[in-house]
Image 1 (spheres, rainbow, N blue to C red):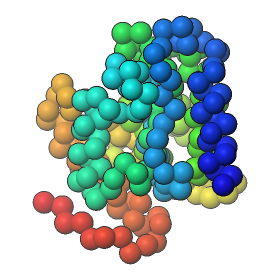
Image 2: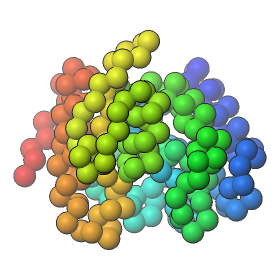
Image 3: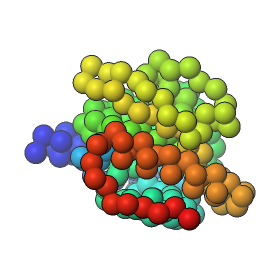
Length: 205
């Protein structure tokens, strides 16, 4: 299939990438994973310690939170696509450098083009910043934007973009878990409306 072949090509390019210094310190690049026909794509910041070891996105503490949030709205990992702005871990989990983002985001752009998600959920500030710049949307603090739905017109369709806090925030501030839960409810309702399908009824308690 076209999508599978294209994603395999992107994965090969990422594994062979030498466009920035992160290739010298990484253990494994983290391409992304999930359904290539996903209606929603989650875009995080960069791999962390465990992601770098295993070569998979969101497998540490933040990944456990993400799995719980997905489950809370009746979604599974294999129904969505999960990736990051950077495909390699910055040493010490420092913030991504501008040059690293510039070098790596063509891979994210390619993933967006292959999957063509109807909803893009940004996780954290760096993801929000890149996606909003890419689609020409005005940015604000994530504290003012989280859980809101933004429409963007492309040549092929109208996409929905929903900024979310990074799941890691709930690992050091447990009170933020409820904020994420409420924002994921909005994500679910947006996805259900946008796809116009008879989704399984979820009762939120």
